[in-house]
Picture 1 (cartoon, rainbow, N blue to C red):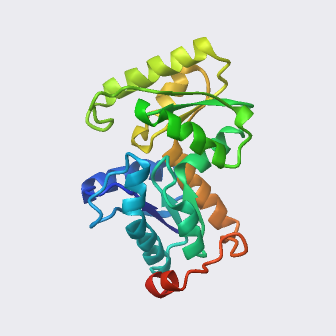
Picture 2 (picture 1 turned 90 degrees about the vertical axis):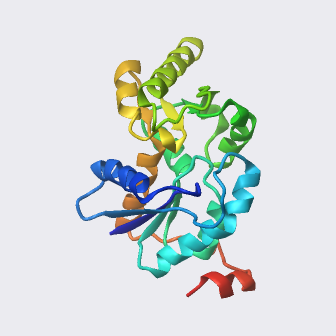
Length: 241
């Protein structure tokens, strides 16, 4: 099985993408191959709805190229699940988003959960977005965010962990939090140590997305073309091999 992971942020190096694949391979079966790509021409790192629009054409093309190259599924490596509906229209193979996969996974281990984002400025957007994932809003508790103040989650893992821990502890004091979803895929690898300290399940969206894609492929499931028909003739000409 081959899974293509699309990191929608422009400018990722091969080394950075390979590191993320190595971490994720700890959670997948030996016969599952992971590969990560990122946009090469958009010049955009996704931090807003406008960024998603600007990056959208290249993301969809990368997904279509993955299907044409023989990949069995595509994972959108972002908690915004950018252009997931468009990718599902363009592809037959499964397209899995980090946000939807992690929130649905949380419901398997709790009755309600909280979410910790990486940017306070995106709280209003994400509160509305989470309601679109097919989950009863009553099962989504507090949505909070850490203030990284320009800190890279990868460059300073210790500080990032401490901020996530403090946010999680505050959330648990203030609300009936049964589990936590990390609302940024740059938090890859921090869920398990957080769970050990907080004493509740902590869901890593990157791991959830890849493992969901793996499970869907093993069940021989494809994207429903009744739900996601490709009706745009221009898109057919540009992305279908």
